[in-house]
Figure (cartoon, rainbow, N blue to C red):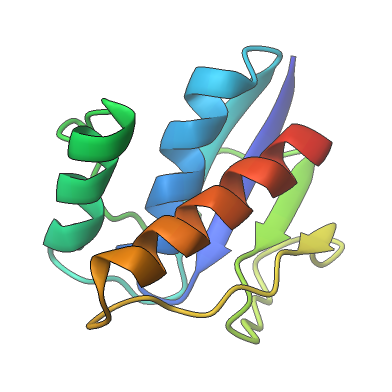
Amino acid sequence: MKKVAFICVHNSCRSQIAEALCKLYRKNLEAYSAGTEIKKVINEAAKRIMQEKYHISMDKQYPKLISEIPVCDIYVSMGCNVSCPTVLGGFTYDFGLADPTGKSDEEYIKVIEEIKEKIMEL
């Protein structure tokens, strides 16, 4: 089974959403998320919307540094111009997503749908 890592700066929103969606919809991939620097907790709005709209709990997920996840076959940047010297070979994909932090629920939902679509295309 191939391993995929979703990388963002803080590993608190988009990358965590991607990990959760990938685990649900892509059983053929082993999903991880990580950041180049991390927040202490996952974005509360992201957790709430994922639970309310998609019935996906992110309660067991937590922010991690890239050094805390295994070496992966696929590395995906969430679109924050992340430069990660610890990612061997660079990024496989860049999802190019805007950060919904601090925006409306509709903006979160838009980003979640974009992430879901891109994961299905992996």
